[in-house]
Length: 595
Image (cartoon, rainbow, N blue to C red; front, side, top):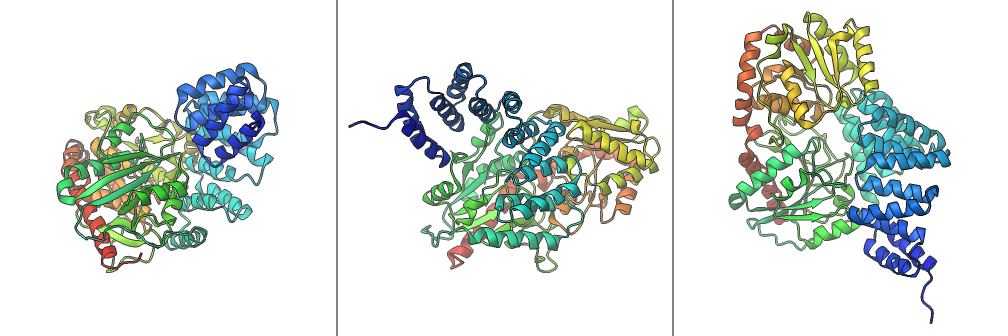
């Protein structure tokens, strides 16, 4: 009796690939290659399977072999580009997709993929053009609206970005991923209130959870005082802004393990590891690379591991795995770190906040679908650890320059037109002052300069800085006298970085949780007088500090030490506070809380 043909084997492999059953797919492909070693489809399948299972040493030679056999075949070019992108070789991926578009000029997916890779290598201006080409060719493409909106947001055009996302949602109203990206974007938009954010998130949560059946019960031992398995799910366990705080919590948990009785189980969903990943991995009690698992498979694994408290570290940011939490694989589920807000879900039991983000007057405001769980004072939502280069604190740059330099090294997507307008007012009031501004691309930098020039700030007073390596980024604070926080989405990592480098930060707070990050962090280092509730007061506070060189010099020399001694760098104390939150939720569940 004859076995399956090569085509039948590869058809089966394709179905396994679509279901991400890589072992089964590779088994079929290997048999096909034994029967026909030069079969292009089999070679391409094998390459993509190897790339998806983190074996670049296998994948890349196979790509080269396929390209040698058929250098102009569109399917081969597309496969090569996908493999290069999965292996972190974005520039080679871009080249392959560009070759494909030269052969097939009406290929929206290729233009879309070029844009995605360009975003990853910091070429946002070029990505915008390719996303617009893809959108013109395929107005109903499931992801172009989201990614083009990201480019617009990252270049400071938040209103335009949100309007584009609304258009995308109108075209695909049942697309939960597109709506999820929209929810994150809402936090950047100064037109949106905290109540509106909650309303949009809750509507998404109802629709999302209605489509997913949760586990109905859990067999975890309800003993309230036993050691707890605390699981963390994240795609950002790498060189990422969250890493400062993940390292701090995990190190604190390691130091207090005997007293907190909490084990750290990590479910790493990274698309690509880097040199920072091992620093995080060594602090975990258990580590699992689960990026290739579907949400259903990951939820099943977490349930099998008998995780007691499951912590989401992503919310609605890129790479979120909220479908895992919707399945309720752990009896207690919490969200923390990505940004303070609400997921909109009811199957996440609590969102971690602090006494400044959510003051509770006397009860927390109804802005969260989860229970608003506040850490006790003096702990902030953030606990910071510096990793990588640690440049020395410099003397105030104004002493050498003869003028004050304001600076914002925040993600430029947080810099709204209102924020820029306030900075223009400040620069005009402080004679000779300069602004050092981080942007994502040259086009954004020129737009910022033009906007400020229209408001009376000469272009030469604004220095634009593009993305630089971490050490150069940290050294940039040596050139800044006063850091300026954006609004309504405050900085967090950048605020801590500035304080570490001796640079005071002026912040504005509002009603949304993300607009109170500056208040939380600055209060911890006794700089709450630099937090204001209006743009007028913000400008006055920054101007006053600019006119007080003695105060700035004192802060320059003392802030690092103050930060190190504060709750913002007390990793063991913070870990104890977080463990207390986990334990309280656990006891509540064990005493008959919802299951």
